Amino acid sequence: MELISILLSTYNEPIKMIEESITSILNQTYKNIELILINDNAQNRELDKLLSNYEKKDCRIKYIKHNANMGLVKSLNEGLQYAKGNYIARMDADDISVESRFEKQVDYLLSHPESMVVGTTMRRFDSN
Image 1 (spheres, rainbow, N blue to C red):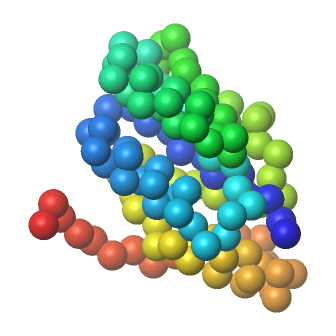
Image 2 (image 1 turned 90 degrees about the horizontal axis):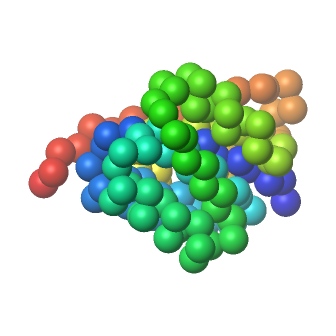
């Protein structure tokens, strides 16, 4: 089973959104993952505590905390340095993935070896 490294950088998203995003990753049907959480907002103590607790609870999580804001691109590039997976996946802190996302993406890549990138569709939703 191929390892997927998932990069998720946070800055100022609401805590509830971040929790939903992380939960949607941890509840995937495809279990061979590592989730690299990058905190790009060192001043947000609540965010630091949340992400640190996730790392303590699940050995698949690696938590990186910046001392100063680096921006999304630099944060993701830093996260790539820690990635050990055969595949790299991106997740925004305000996204929620359907539980079969990675299973379907890996199946596609394995059955289409000429493919190097896969994407997904999106469905908009609001607080209701």
